[in-house]
Length: 270
Image (cartoon, rainbow, N blue to C red):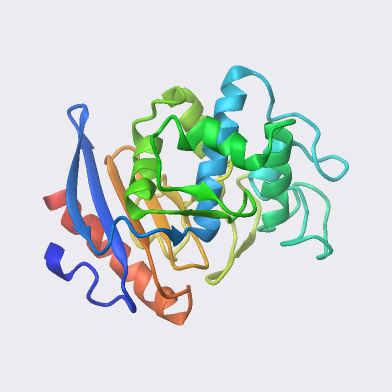
């Protein structure tokens, strides 16, 4: 893959950054498109919210075992989409830890619990956006899907998950481990997987054959209905982010599995 062809098969006007971490420093392997345009990250917001929660966990102001949400559910259940809540309020529910039910509502409740008395915009700015100098990004709506920002800032966020400055690597690893590993569930847009591994706010690839392509099982990240994505692998030191002017749809289901695989193969050889 030639960097100049990185966006050839994408519709609209994507912006893409591929980064590599090694010897204590970052290299930008490729950068394509308008990297400074503010764009919706949609559900990629969840990995910023998860990072904000991780800082609170590290401080001890909240705990993964805190009871939050429906009876029997904890903060960990909410973050790992295992609380039994539906996608949105009023949707069908089930008992905690019986299915992996992807839930915007669950992430919103987790953020509200961790933020305490702070407004969510202020909480996320204090916990993540400000400390990482993500100056072009702000929360315009829900903690599950409301961030609008530049592709440069999204790359900063993805890089933070590989070489964290806000939390210890042990906390990062704890957020990216699989919670309730036997649960089956649906990845919106890609179908049902059994099991359907998920970390605390980040999706873990595991054995799923979907948008993460042939990235290693430990890879994690998120995509959003805006056509944005962030995908990282700690062991390989690779971070891939993209934003889009075309919402997620059949084009992404067809393109991303092959595209993310090709990008990784090229990046490892660079």
